[in-house]
Length: 140
Image (cartoon, rainbow, N blue to C red; front, side, top):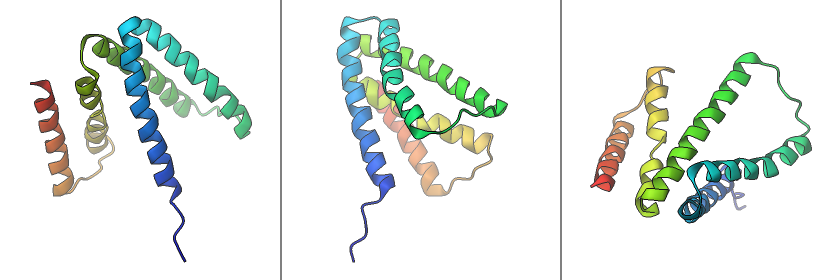
């Protein structure tokens, strides 16, 4: 019997496609609008999809203070990142800005190793080094 198409892969491909379109539309929009205008419209788009999805899910709001703090900081850093990306796209080429900013998981990796004490094997460390080399190559 054939294995079912894994849900994680379906969601990963949807994210890949959505982020790709997001990057393209961010460049096109940033040519016409300021980074702040782009962020306001980005936020409007978030609310248009997120609020109905939340109500439809039936999940009650949590009152966990630490979770609420992390969620709030996630939003704050997302706004900072979006404003920076929109500003970079206004000045630079999407074909360079998007791959460079797409290396943001390197920050997550470093924080996970330092703060969460996660371990990396040699191959993973090599991948991080190659990603840094790619960033350097993109910048020249």
